[in-house]
Image (cartoon, rainbow, N blue to C red; front, side, top):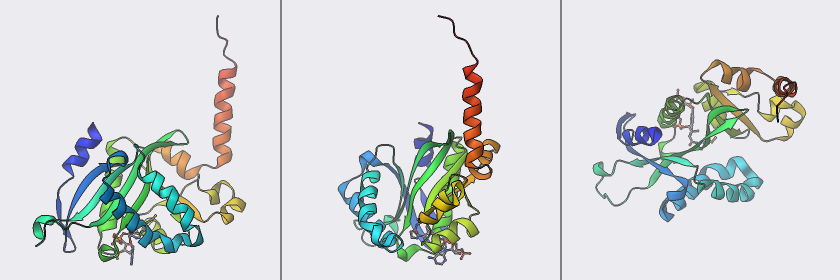
Length: 227
Ligand SMILES: CC(C)(COP(=O)(O)OP(=O)(O)OC[C@H]1O[C@@H](n2cnc3c(N)ncnc32)[C@H](O)[C@@H]1OP(=O)(O)O)[C@@H](O)C(=O)NCCC(=O)NCCS
């Protein structure tokens, strides 16, 4: 498959990230080793327990289920073992979890997780991985990258919005209905790659999308079918 070939090609050494010497590996939710599952859970807990606060216990269970779904695709980041004294020890430094799905009938790459170990944060790796994700999305003719961020995760918000120019999507609760949005503790962000995705996921309101659907159904209700 094209994506797998593409990710395989990207399983390479990266030597230019502000002194980091890393390698990337691809994976899928139904083929994770127990060791990888434990590393993923550890990173998630270290990074996300704070932003989720009292909701973490519930969210951790949700994330455990999401982690092993067959449609979950991964890119893992490890130290380049060849450059280390002890080749056997290769702790997970970070990972991306994404899926190909539909949002408002637009094909999108939905980024479920981007998690980096604290030792490699703030060195350009997150930005590099997001560029990679955007490339994968465009290579696979997705209209956008979509992701969810906790409002309390102010560093991540700043990272996506100020640094990477993501915008709050028109499907985010705060834009669908500001009253509901206030109650929700997350925003849905997106970056679009074509006009249709921009129109639906960035610009238009929920009222427009409803009208669009109703209009579509009305057009078909006039059709007469022969027995
Ligand atoms: C958010 C995260 C993915 C960003 O990746 P990163 O590699 O740390 O970010 P980068 O080094 O590429 O930083 C890019 C910019 O974002 C900002 N930034 C992001 N994280 C930062 C941090 N921890 N400290 C300071 N600035 C940060 C900076 O403005 C930086 O700009 P600069 O390069 O001009 O200094 C990473 O910090 C992380 O894994 N955080 C914990 C998990 C998390 O919150 N994930 C997102 C869930 S939606």
